[in-house]
Length: 504
Image (cartoon, rainbow, N blue to C red; front, side, top):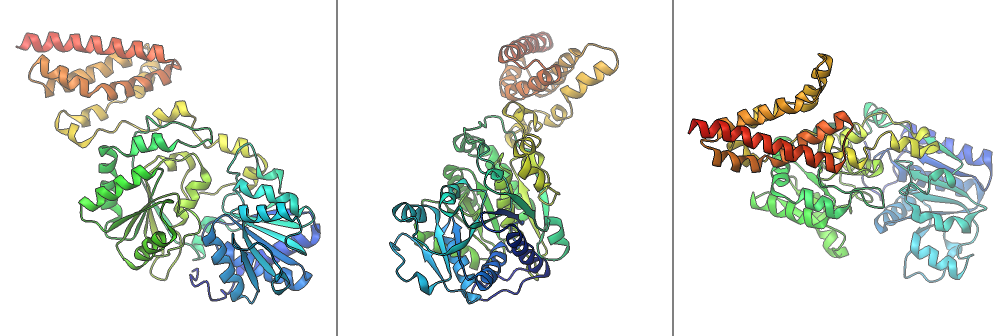
């Protein structure tokens, strides 16, 4: 169980002691100019490990240690943990223009941009540095500083040794990877809470992939901001997480604000937080969240690192991501173990589990480090496959219009492959699909005019089915799909007219 009081020098667990010894031996064996990357799951105590490592390194070598972070919260946490270990340290922030007093300190903690500016003015800004520790080493912003420390050891620390930029793999700058305890091992040994995963099928049509490789914020705001997705979010919360401390991760500010409004209307204790908040506002919201047992905090990215609230019982991924790193960062916010908290819940509303597997699943991080392109390609669906990830989900209001159970019971892919197995042309699957729609519409409509109105409502469902059909036959050009949809609607409309006009 991880102690959350950063003012107390935390006693290292056996696996942490072993890790410190292993890293020191690695650095000692390979001498200077050797860069080592260390992987440990979120919640495993990376700050504790490298703080103890810094202390021992300083004691044995007499050289100084520089810790690089990308968030001020991480800088403060690291400084407090070092101080608790009697390591005199100083945070280099924007107000620190020179280090006339640097002989008074053994360790320095710096934000990337601030230190980069100082080093450009004076490349000997900090003297006698022997070890550079990079926290959250998967971020590429740290690379610009490596040129100033070519004759030092560099230790990168991360939960996911995959670069945030596929074009700049970590093995370009790190000589080797040391893999720590796995998630499942930390759970079994009582250091992490176990995660119960609840996946809800969502329709991701409309999502677009940006130049950075992940889904764009604008397309996710479009998909997750609609009423149907809000209904699904509330349903999932009330089914799994109701009245327990809950963190909701969204992709965009617009969605997070909508989420806050949705929960407020239902009288839930909820607040929204994003990067536009001032330091004071942010501190107040986080303090409220810590003190409120049933609090719901809906946020955008800002709480994926540098935030630690062990009391969180539920993590809701109200977004999709193609980043394995982000997937683990979000879930890791709920994995802190307490005496009365051995488990937490993961609610997935982005088909992320289908993309990456369960949070606890074994990952070959050595493979990820050596062959990042191959590793990622084997786990991430491409854009054209997004529409085939899930079955179609009907908005609740449509369930009153027609028999959605009957529609959902039919699979055009199953019909296609069953036909092939029986030596029949697969195109019969379209006829069977049309008959299924025909029967449902005839049951729901009293005349042709009403059936036509319901047919309009079914257009997304029809298109979804036919996209699955084109996937089966490997013909998925937009023109062919358009032809199928137009022909399907024309024939279905004709069948309805013949049937319902005759009945009239």
